[in-house]
Length: 120
Image (cartoon, rainbow, N blue to C red; front, side, top):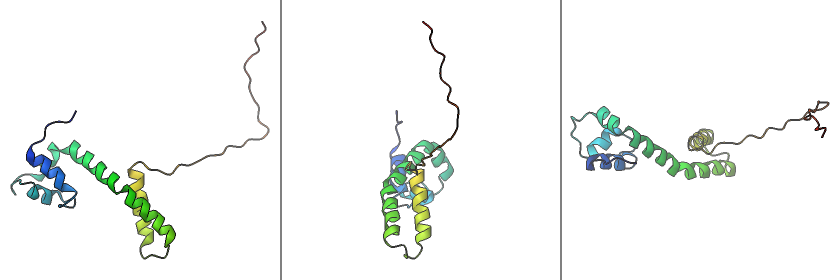
């Protein structure tokens, strides 16, 4: 159940990751808040919505991170590729696309325990 937001709050969330580029002070001004308005109070009142918008922004950019990782395979000599790959990996990890690890267990000479026989 989402709560009703004021027009300014909706505008703040709309511009936060677009025109404001993540800058909360810039988003506050673009949304029409007064310069004397407390940025901390605005964020406190919109904490859950800002977190949701952040997750959405990360998810929106996950495909770009995946393309960057594949691009690193195609051109491993690109300048700054190590940092780019690291950033792409972090973004993909944070959006839930994580590396899966498989573990193989081998044993020799072990003992197998079986359940008791029914003597009926």
